Length: 242
Image 1 (tube, rainbow, N blue to C red):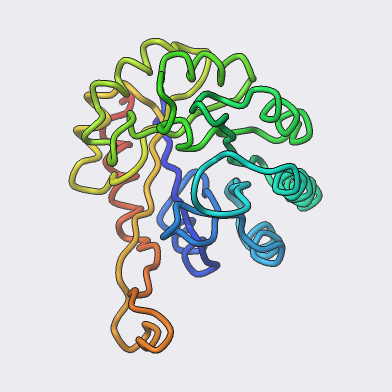
Image 2: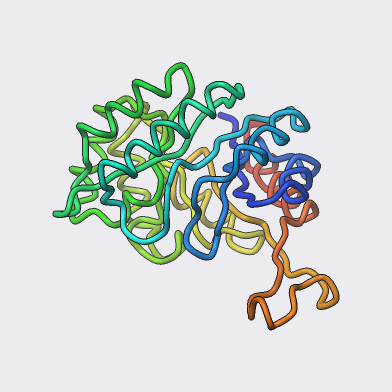
């Protein structure tokens, strides 16, 4: 059993730092403050040109809920085709119905369009009323993995649910814990969840001189820290097979 570490990044510098630290894969997105939206064509293209690890862009046309209009669905289809044309190894997506169940019909259409790329179902899963039924729906769709915090704000808070989901999924799909995973709690999450893949931003705040002036934003500038990525990879290696 080999543990894998996926790093979520929203810029080219962060992508390079994730690879330098030893990440096995990146989830590429924009607008992390909103949970991630689809990155630009240019960012995806340059990442594919500069990186040797797999690139999984998120397909999410806006922040907010995961119930989309016909026009937004068309945008998602177009973005998936763009990712395929650029040679991405996978995409990350998720659509729900108003009653907080998986929109299996439109998910199936996007997944078919995405192949042969892999598909990760993102944390829209955590917004579902019944996680067990949602998991079975995602498995039936043929997704390779689902990103989850166990229905809680952070993975560490949803560990018991994540463990149950891992056991339920067995080898049918990878249940990948994410949200709030860092150097300090990764080992506990590995040992308690039974999962084999883990998702983190490994981000740090850049010095004040590099952050935008308050005229434009009150938010500090965050960037992936390659040292944190390496430390987490070392934790996974120490817990893996000898």
